[in-house]
Length: 182
Image (cartoon, rainbow, N blue to C red):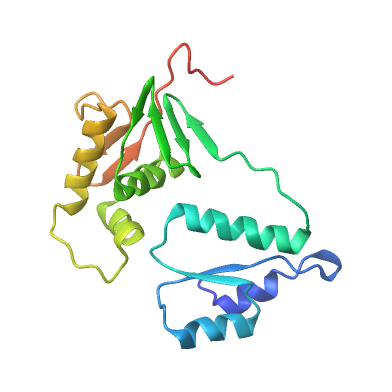
């Protein structure tokens, strides 16, 4: 079922007439599109692609405005041996601090946020570079290879990123005795 943004906005009217905050995402960054979204009732709008940190900051800001007061938020995501500090842009794999480029961090966030799910090269390309970006056929593969090198991830025995031949890539969190989930 394909519904438009205006129908989604109608559905955000919560019980007792409480308005749920709305952050719109668009691939069209022109002023006319943004103004139309605000006219329909969105609280904020972002153009794809965007950084995960900016999305997080905007979600926190509109939620704080809508519900008042500070929010509890843990900026550190721990998944197996990987620890991602979103706000401070620090990545830790096991006992090693990793120094990743912003694009590598975004790629890792994207894969980790979809842990267990196969992401196609096209999905990765659209999420990180946008749908209008024309790239070489191996752009995603090169960035995954670079990220794997920094994660000390052998593609034959995946520690974090598994290749699904002919399909794409999948994040596989590895749990050790010390890093096991409780």
